[in-house]
Length: 220
Image 1 (spheres, rainbow, N blue to C red):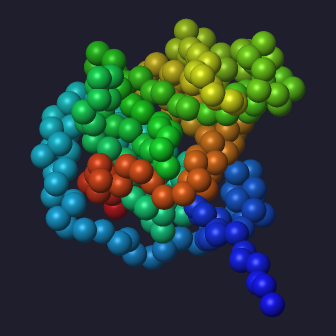
Image 2: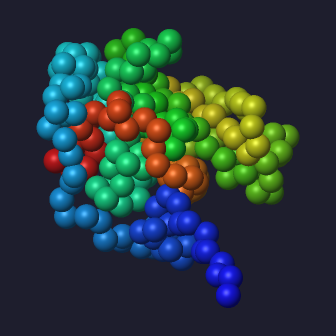
């Protein structure tokens, strides 16, 4: 008799069922994480020089402080999923010259840049989380919410990249970056987008993961 195979569970669905994921997005669940991290000392040392270089930047203190907020608030079960389902790169060698970049699957999630002695950030998100009617229609963008989610309206800008339900928010200044992450609606949007891509499968950027930066994100 023929048997039917079950669809393979991908991403962090193997750790969190849909109800747990929805509860985490809404801030209604304290998810149990792994007690210990799985790491390679060889890989840790690979990016130690870049980490030391970052620490000499005038923005280093704020970078680590913001990542200390982003890690526990924006990534589900970060210890259990570290490197395999998300990663953070330190001074990645890309043309836009970021200080750090957080990735999942094949997607950039969050990037910090030097802006003189301050910081700039780029969040990639679902447009439907920022429209007045929940659609992925640019004309329905809730611009007043965006302006109110940062310290001053001029500290936020946006654009619509190619791709369905995609939205890029650029925030200027460490204070506004903190305020954006702390805003309940923006935080739900960040969590939703991050889960979308962590559920798509294993992280394609494992080779560039910087454990020294991740220490801060994991409170170590």
